[in-house]
Image (tube, rainbow, N blue to C red; front, side):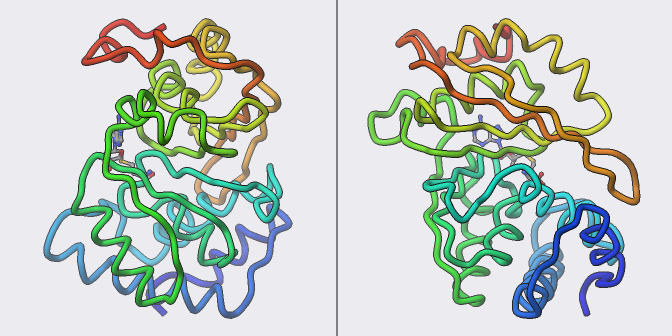
Length: 236
Ligand code: SAH
């Protein structure tokens, strides 16, 4: 086993989640591929069996506690990196319609070949989120966007919310700083046509995480997302 399965199960139990034996086997094979590829180029700093179980797998799967993914429609994993949270979610729910987005092509290349080995299908968008948000094909086209460890919430909202359909949701996966980030993002959330639906604490064995769930209530003004470095330089 390429990760600590009993630690994953303990964390899933704490969230009242369970996954199938097939899902465990897919996660194990994915952890093996991640370790292998990580020797060639840097995909993740977390490589120990406990870290993979908790920080990668349990944390990613925590998204299942706040929404019914089976009926979620088109899902976007924005800034997926080595595939988190999207790959564990897909490994546990093989029928999902997931698009993996990252500005780095080689990371998407890794996910694409790993998913092929696992017999899972998905789509891939090698773009910056703020460019995709101004592209007709992607703007307001996803039912659910999820994102972990990409940017502070006020910046992340301008990346993610233009991509979400009115009536859809955005889940920001945050750590200890969630409350502070949320208070700094109040104005961004409002300007981008969203509202906070719920805040859910996730009690992982290595510390608390927080899922911030937003609902997209109205269309985003054409002026967002802004171009160039403005989003980061002067967050809404
Ligand atoms: N979500 C993963 C990776 C986090 S690292 C995890 O939690 O492990 C952040 C990733 O987001 C990197 O792979 C980076 O290339 C990507 N990224 C950062 N800003 C982005 C943007 N504006 N659009 C698309 N991808 C972005």
